[in-house]
Image (cartoon, rainbow, N blue to C red; front, side, top):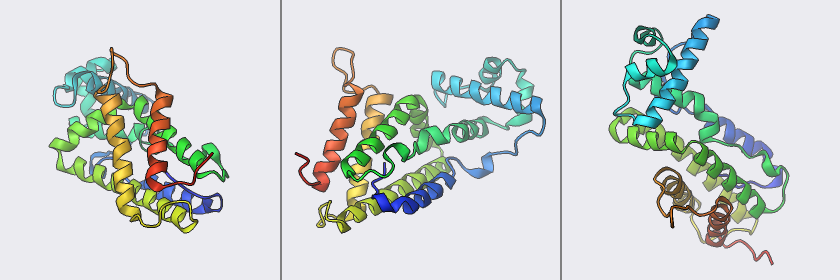
Length: 237
């Protein structure tokens, strides 16, 4: 999520570029890609199959033989492209990174209303999380057992929180947000609220009543109101 003013387009683009450049997995796990068309197709099939198997079985119980079978490949073919489970999981994250981690901010370009920008940002983030809920859950799982994955996950999360803190500080300078708040602390609290809510609702399916989760639009509206109220946005009436 990102809060930005109309004339801050350059800052927003710079922030997005810096975050997009951050790795989602240890770079040492990402091998050079194949140079042949056939190799590219086989590698892509293995990555797609790995995501299916990981999401179906979980990271710990996923087997390389199952990934090869899902991809329609011999097990030996797997080792042509990946050395182990860690490498193929890193490749899965790399393929999904754009959709999963930074949905972008072009939805209300030039809007003057900070509430509209905030709502669009929350909607984009929550929609991306919902689409990738199983994979986001896998990232939580792997981060608990692999220090390297945990390190890169934390670095990316911290980059988002610093970006949001800059957005909050900008709103404070314009008299829109409560100037008594520390921007970084507010960003940590509010960003954490949204990410944990998304994990709870979309990955763990907590909060269901009679087997149904809250409506997506209701989730977006509630999260946006909580952000706006916490930052003490002006009355919109």
